[in-house]
Each structure stands twice: as structure tokens, then as C-alpha cells.
Image (cartoon, rainbow, N blue to C red):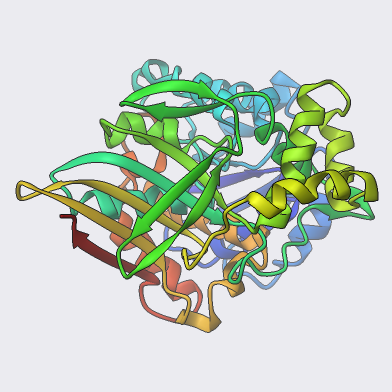
Length: 399
């Protein structure tokens, strides 16, 4: 298949292209970006690749140019954000041109919007996978593996690390001394209201709510809710009858500072952009305000840094299942999560490979867990880091 990599002049798209160049079934890649010179620069990095990698300037707001680019390829990888502005636009164009589609959308609102195009994608024979990155993406597939161990699902939680061991040194919050779109996104999803699942139904809640977890292997700790697509899609695919949320594994100090920023955003004292600057350059006044909260905030205990934790019934008994990444493989989880561009771009390319070879090529708009073969995906992910499958599944009966 010929592939169009939208926004691949950016770090996440470029990481996906790097992986895609050695995947079977990829015949050629076109790197398309609003900054044509940047696209050319990235394309030159792959001059020695076994397939042709070319570049073209493309502004996705130019509907005619976008459709022209899509008609010349079989599949598009969309890493152009923010997805609340561009997700539906690009997906609609892909459906119109019969082009298979994958993205790394981590906003819950546009995820709902794009899932609403399912009928149109089915009618066009287009397979679209929304949120095929780290979280969502890897997190969804960990949840799918855990759910396979249960007869029915009660609660379903996915979690990712912020500043705990295993989180690595995330440099995605600053570029040239300024907060990135990722930092602004984090502030948006840590304020206002977010989507979660309570008693099996989608509900709106405030973010940064504590969730105390007791997991197999003697693990116990508290993580905190944040806005993400996982509860929306897991509610559809796994049908939990209890609660579901996406969580941050975070230290009390950082959580307390986020709580101060949340309150100020909600009160109108900070914009998301200003809060992102405050996050990357904490001020003494807000640090002082965060201290009382930090002192009474429960920490992550010995929770793993990146995991899916499900509870439910198995063989007539209450049961807990934990699916997490093995910290010992391929130099440790921080080798993956210390570089969020790779942590997001590599899963995107590996998900694409399952569309290309037909395993995941089912018409419609899907979250990863609905169509991606999780065991094969994690085998491929481990291979990218020089090892075997990086997943550990632990489980135990309850009571």
C-alpha cells in the first residue's frame, strides 16, 4: 500500500514513518506537511530506506489539495492536531476518497465525533482506527488483553506515568522554551469536565479525582483521573457494568500543582496556554498554594507506571486482572516512554501494518481494541525494542 503521512514533519509522525519504512506491504510513503521544507528535510532522512519516501507541501485546511493527496494513496496516517479542529475534517476526506485512516487522537470530544462517522466509513469500505498511539492505543490493547481473562467486566482503568519511576524524561512539554501543544492539551484535559464511566454509563466528571487501586501482585496505590478517550471506547467495546476512567500515575507534589492550575483555569484566572507555561515554569505563589494539597494527597504506592487494571467475574468468582509493560525488557519502559514521539509513533505504524495485511481491515470507525489483534501487536512492539512480548498479565481471585 502507498501511505500518506500527514504532519510527519513533526516528531510523532516522523517516528511512525521510521518504523513504517521496514514494514511488509508498505510500497512508498509521502510525507505531507504544511511546512514543505520541513517535510523535505524529514524525507531526506530516509534516503537509504528500502522504499521511496518523498515529500509534498500540504495544508489540511485546503480541501481540494487534501483530497488530491488522498486519492493517490491507499492509507493515511494523520498526526495533525489538534484533533478537535482537524480530526473529523481529515477523516471525512479519507472516507470520501476511499482511503484507510489511522490517527493518534487523544481528545475524547473529537473521538466521539469521529466514531459518529462509522456508518459512512462502512458504506465506503474504509477502515479507520482512531487513537492508535500510546494512550490511547497501547493502553486500550492492554485492557483488551486483561478483558480476555474475564467472563464479564466490572471496572476498567487504564493508566500512564507522569513523573514516577518508569516515566522517563519527557521532553514533549517544551519546544524552544515554549509549552508545546501536548502541554496545552494536558491542561485542557485536567480542567473543566471530562468523560468517564460510572455504573456502566458515560458521565461528565471533574478531572483529578482520586482512584484507589488494589491490584494483583500486592500492588496498591492511588492514581488520578484525566480526560482521555479510553473510557469512551472501552465502554463500547468491553461493556463494563461498573466504572472506567483514564488515570495518571503521578506523585503528590505534581498532582497538587495540577490541582491549583485546574482551579485557576476553571475560575477563569488562567487560560490553558497560560497554565501550560505555569506547568513548565512553576511560580512560587502557586507552589505555596499547592503545599497543603500535596501533604494530604495519596501517592501511587507501588503501582506500575503504565497499565490496564480490570475487575470482573471469572468462572463465577470475582477476579482482578492487571496487564502492564514489563520494566525489564529492552532496557526498561523508560526506553519507550522517555521519548513520547516514539511511544506514540511506533504503535501508530504497527497498527497500520495490521490494516495493510488485512488483520484489522474492517470497514468502519474503530478504537484500537475493536480491531487490532493485541497479542500480535505486542509481539511486534517487543521486536521493535529487540525483545519478546513486553506484556505481563497478573491476576487473582477476590474474596
